[in-house]
Each structure stands twice: as structure tokens, then as C-alpha cells.
Length: 128
Image 1 (cartoon, one colour):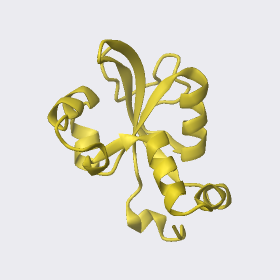
Image 2 (tube, one colour):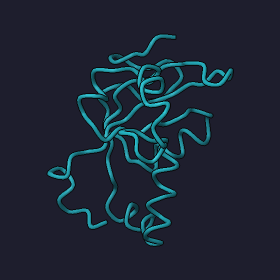
Image 3 (cartoon, rainbow, N blue to C red):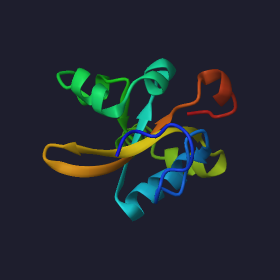
Image 4 (cartoon, helix red, strand yellow):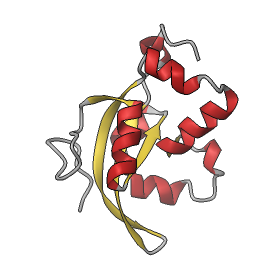
């Protein structure tokens, strides 16, 4: 399936352009086996594809890429601040769904959703 950037993604329960709580996306990914990716750079998120980015950044260490698996981001943040999850429950971090699709990584077929981290201007009240 090609990357979809508009309309509802079949069987994904979200659509590109939707704003969704990070913990809800984590649950959706865990429950339905959907790989969630969080992008930090808007231009890359909107104008590239996950497959291209995986190829382009293959040699870059995982935590230095401009995108990361959502669950790894949450785990890293929680390792730095044990109250991170509680903070997210008190003040949700809302991500924008950018695209969804399917691809093969290391010989395994994966469904995925890419999301975009809000800019710091949009996160003014979140103290992380």
C-alpha cells in the first residue's frame, strides 16, 4: 500500500490531518500492531516517505534521526523523567497524523502511521 496523506487510512482508525493524543496513538499501535513514528522536522514529515527516510537515515544512529518510533520516544523521555507519563495524562501531548501505509522492513511487512511533534510554540504549557 502506498503512503496515504489524505482521507482515512483503511483499518487504522485515524486519518492524516487528525490531531491525536500521544498516549492514544501508543495504545492504538500496541493494540493493533501498527508501527507509530514520530517526526521532529515538519518539512521531512510532510514531503518525504517513511521508506525513503528509513533508507536515507539507515547509517544514522537511531536516537540521532529526525524521527523515531513513538514507543521508543516515550520510553526515553520516561527514563529521563519518571513522571513523564503522568505529565502526559495531566496535559496531553497532541500529535498530528501525517500519513499511514504499509512497507517491508528487514523482510517483515509492517503497517505504520507517521506523526508530527508539535512545535515548541504549540507546546507552551507542557513542562517536560
